[in-house]
Image (tube, rainbow, N blue to C red; front, side, top):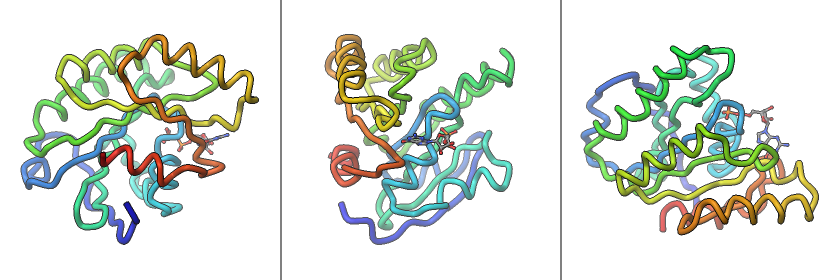
Length: 189
Ligand code: GDP
């Protein structure tokens, strides 16, 4: 898929007409700081797009970007933010689960983004299980691969693979930005 146009549409916190307008969605979730905004921006070749939300203090909103007038890329709030405290984590977890149950649009793929150096955390395992139970197509983007050497990376990938049987695993680095086309094709496949 060649990126022809991208546009920030809106940020939502609960139900909204955008969840019922028939545009297929590709959702991105991950722990805070895994580089979710950086990945979205690098895939869309738009340096500041996903930060638009952040600048406006909208980290707790679900941000919708219209891509090629055809798909929504949905940037869900980062979960498991340590400073947020337990209540806050629960709120964000609820918000994500509510989004998945509310949207009537077809969720084409859910991309779970993790940090290559950190690997899978219990937050990620929890999310993947929920997504699986709801029969979503899940792919795992292992971001920040540039932080590991080749040997460390292959050990990490093997360990992730053994836990995530049947899930497509896409190593990536938003900094190096190599293979963005391959990741994009996979998300819309
Ligand atoms: P978000 O909170 O998940 O949206 O994360 P951000 O996109 O704001 O990124 C968090 C931090 O990780 C920033 O300092 C980024 O520069 C950094 N980062 C994001 N992607 C990569 C990557 O692929 N490699 C490295 N080394 N750093 C990255």
